[in-house]
Image 1 (cartoon, rainbow, N blue to C red):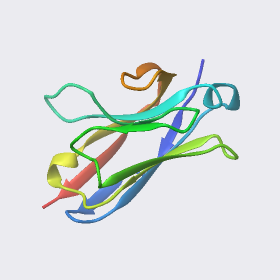
Image 2: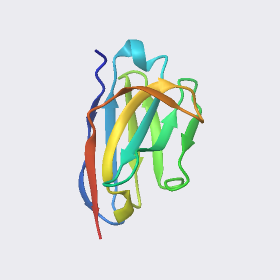
Image 3: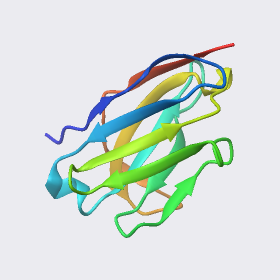
Image 4: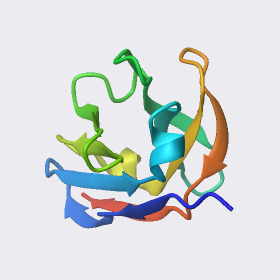
Length: 119
């Protein structure tokens, strides 16, 4: 079973920053598009950002200019640097490994990490 291990969630005030991390097995990381999704209460899970193995990235319109996704091949880890956080960014954030970019098709999922932004 593929394990994606997330960390970095928490409580932050509006305007603040957080960085999420997700470690993946090397055999998956090197070939997969790595992505972050989020799901707020009562809403569908949505793509936040994705980074293909070749370097291309994609962001949802709601986070462009505020969030940055990056890949660290030395550590098989994908990061989501979140800045200028808003209360509407509050959600459970999930790491995923999958295929493609725009659209990205998730195959493996992490357990999720809670991000709460207070106003």
